[in-house]
Length: 351
Image (tube, rainbow, N blue to C red; front, side, top):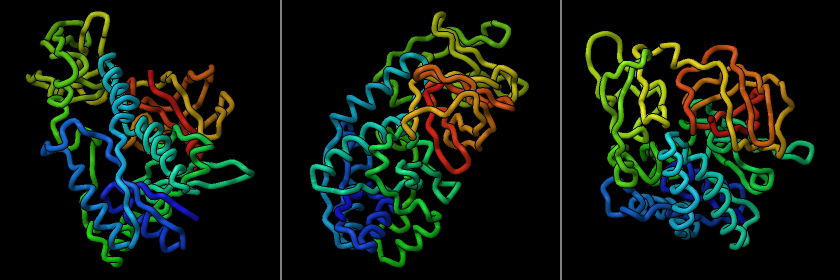
């Protein structure tokens, strides 16, 4: 069948394209340009990534098309990213980018090209059972990306394959090396695509005004001044600007009504620990939520071990999750994602 593979210039998507071709499919590579504002910038690697994707496609023996989704990205992902930061939350643009760009704009474009399926280099798996599709974790637990894909729908899952989902990263690099792919040793990209490796605060400063206000401790005593609540996140330790003796300071809360930043001393301070959270804008891979109450595990951020929890309330698109043990630095704007063993169920945006 015809498979259009999203190729980013990295090794994972190159191997995804290679494996799709080896499986006998008619494969076309598609490079997505999602950001234009500072393409000549030292931190923006779009041009270099396109060259790497083209070199890999050439080696595999497939065509590569470049498509510009910058306008869609700006409208559907970046504008929402700025709105969330301005409201004092810490959004996860990768979750939004997957739902709106990679598995919507890209999927639509691929269908217009006559594709039966799209493929990406995500570490995740799709399983069809009883006429429904299930999103499973990637085999490589250290690389699993199902967290970022939890908002995908049944329709989207029915159209996608994840060729590297059953592999460990080391196997992906070995396959790339043996196939002579020029990007076999390319370093994994980190961070948010439109920010790259640049200093985050400096980037945000271009788009959001600085609104200074008081920094207070857990007793309400003023101990400093912040540069604007948008520039801090729950659990942050560096860049607060408070020194002194004793344990390090951490951001524990942001009070928008008084433009106040609350900080505490010590990693395990009670104000940093939460046993219950609520989330809105819930999305469920199966198309409907699990029954409540029900026992699951959940992550409140990507790089985190699963924690046992109870989905105790589902009200339209709002949910409440209760954890057996307190969770550190639960952050409004991030996603809580629920699992049943290997199966990713979905989740919501922490409020």
